[in-house]
Amino acid sequence: MRISSKSAWHTLIATFLAVACSAANAQLNVDITGVGSNLYPIAIANFANGASAPQDISSIVRADLTGSGRFSQINAGDAPVSETDQVDLGSWKARGADAFVGGSVTRLANGQYDVRFRLYDTVKQASLGGLSITSPASDLRLTAHKISDYIYQKLLGVRGVFATRLSYIVHTGNRYQLVISDSDGQDQHVALTSREPIISPSWSPDGTKVAYVSFERQKPIVYIHDLPTGRRVMIANYKGNNSAPAWSPDGRTLALALSLTGNTQIYSINANGGGLRRLSRGSGIDTEPQYSPDGKWIYFTSDRSGGPQIYRMPAAGEAAGAAQRVTFQGNYNVSPRISPDGKLLAYISRVGGSFKLYTQDLTTGDVTAMTDTTHDESPSFAANGKYILYATQVNGRKVLAVVSVDGRTRQILSVRGGGVREPSWGPFMQ
Image (cartoon, rainbow, N blue to C red):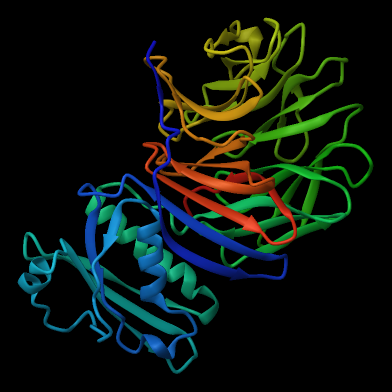
């Protein structure tokens, strides 16, 4: 087993965005590591008529790509360039750009906006296509993120996650809020406010619902919150502990941890609250279930061997096959999360007095330390598997962070006057 570390951060502050929302004032600081020739140089011109829109599309796209840690920006100047303009690709290549983007924004008679762009490969002197997207003013940020996703996939061959969403808990004074935001922490919406703790948000596979645990009735109860309508359904209010909901890949069932029989064990339950079934049979505490992407396995945390370690069992439960231990490096490993391709395990390990984010290759067993922070918790993979969202502390403040799986990029999201924790990264938008 090889053990390596990606915890030495030699960072460059690349961008600073101020976020205003009804929940709190947030700041997203993007720190980029590994700056060098491996970044893709791109020039993104100001879109024609872009100033007429309430959102600066080209600026959002630049921030998205820079924040990914995979691109460097070549100054495109102030002059707007539309998708129909003749572009001297050789000139842009000579200025150091391997790709160029031009576009336009047009306000339609019905008040919506038509946003168009074209992407060019200056090395091959070729167009890589583009999109035409019509959206209301309220969705212009999402439109910009979709453009970023297109560029990311065309140039890197991997689907982008800029148009995905995050959920997390903001704690300010005696108030807890379940917040939904864009992947960059902006366009925040409060789904639920409570004076009692809210924990463990978990996205449904189609991105329309979030399951979570609320203590509003003075005990942990599992709810499912429908985001489009704001309606919610109580699905687990059993005696004792009801916690750690996790959706199956098909969205029909959830795994969760209940203490119906004394020690906390893993159960499955239908998304409508019926069909409760016990899955784990440990002698100690079994908790934090997580389905594998193919739905065949459930990974979970158990202290059945002494200290907490990560195990996996068949999704049908231990009656269908004994649980197998997965983590062996260290004596305290919790919070399993599986990458979308099923190849990588992210988890939290206690090292001395610190709690740190690690990954483990599920084929080779190789373990990698991902961060230099000491209070990491609640990891969550991006839908493309290239980034991990987690909670941590920086200068005594509870913040969220994103690290790329190659260790090159870190983003920090903090809230003025409060703490942020319990993050979950949503799926690709349907």
